[in-house]
Image 1 (spheres, rainbow, N blue to C red):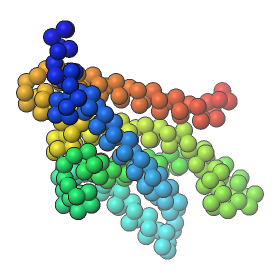
Image 2: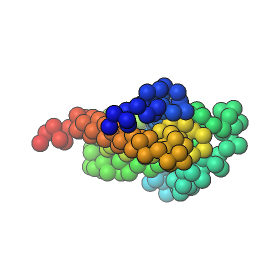
Image 3: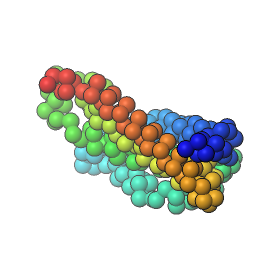
Length: 231
């Protein structure tokens, strides 16, 4: 055990060998990706829900186009998507390697995934609650702000938690194409160098991060769920 702790993965802060610096890089990519994904994915999911009942006109076409884009985005395996986006990443970020470049591809992958989950959360709201507010003369924006989003909030937090855990897994794959982080460390310093200490350490850290994210997400979801509070 003492020999394990003398491994450079534990004793340095060099991003090429350190478990600690690569853990911070993974967290940086995850948090940054989720910020962009939430800002775009939640409104996109709301748009899908709001236009889903349209029988014709512009709203119906918006739903079809956005739904098609979301389905295409969800169908791409991440490792293929990150390679396919290399020219776009180079144009927008200025480079194709490093955490910032990886975050662009991570966000492109996470946004459609989150948008569809948000749409599902909104569909689960009782139609009777919406109709009751409509009968009181509420505008559509008031319904969204005062009924749909508050009622769906526990589910939305659950969807954000699920997406965050998926993004953590994607960051490991991003390491295979120069994204840095724990995935890059595990493959380059662990698998390719036949260093079992690095492999075990990175897996343990990833498991701990996922468990912590799930615990936090579950706690927040219960805290805002008025149905659970009423029981």
